[in-house]
Length: 84
Image (cartoon, rainbow, N blue to C red; front, side, top):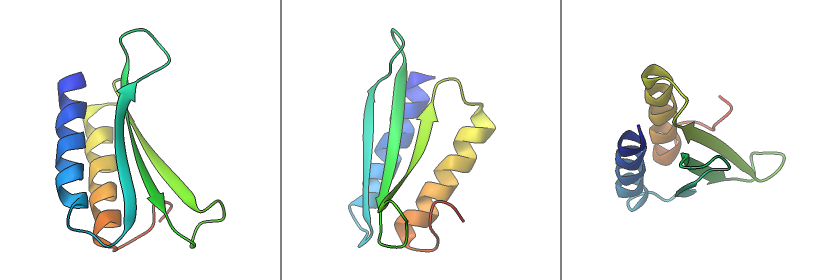
């Protein structure tokens, strides 16, 4: 599963290079031993806290990861906010 998360991180970072949105993607180890997580951050004045996140984790189903990936792609394109 960590290879799937790494692929998602690489795909999102490739899209981030061409956006005007204030976004970042961080791939890191989690709280649990050998756990890998991916955080997608979108900074915008549209949010109450200025930032919203999408968490991609190994315990998510493939379908859930796909849905989160599609949402992140829309955010990168400027089509929506994370909570939409």
